[in-house]
Image (cartoon, rainbow, N blue to C red):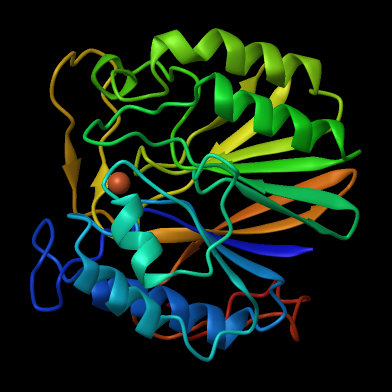
Length: 275
Ligand SMILES: [Fe+2]
């Protein structure tokens, strides 16, 4: 299956900028890249921070933006989202029996599990006992799974950023659950940190993606402030099967000519007019 992983689009009320840029334009550019080059995608998954201030108008604009796409879109909650406003704009959104935006679907033999790791008025992640029970049941009912979520459920070596990871109190139960089901969980995919970070946790590989807006500047000593800048945004293309995952970082705001090569591979002689 081919999955498009987009994150942290931070939409505003149209006309309002976010971090010095227009988040709507950026999201539109990302979707246009998907339309142009990834018509074969099976899902577009946006892992939270759908909006920056959680306003109904921002969610309404999100809904309007999701047109003429090649495949279904899956939306997740982030710390900047407002669950009630989101559900007002997307009333058919599946959720679990406790009202969290936790849901899952089976595709090509793999259960794609979309997690709601948020709690009101906190930037840190939350995934308490009730959500653990739901996720455990989802994992028990499948043989292959892939988890998508907003927050990193582990610390990542950045003291300030780690303060808004999954809260420390919820980490042990989440880690224990991952270890119980590690053999069937192919990957953890998340956003939140506005940077690409890859590794393994509890024996499971993980990967985050950049924001479509501003990027963070990883800082391994700062304990309070998050630093960021206007580095180029990107999203990820995930080519996934039961025994392999390939992730490509896809920039989408560049401009300029596309160079092609391949018909003249025996090009060992330097052209006279070489640049
Ligand atoms: Fe974000």
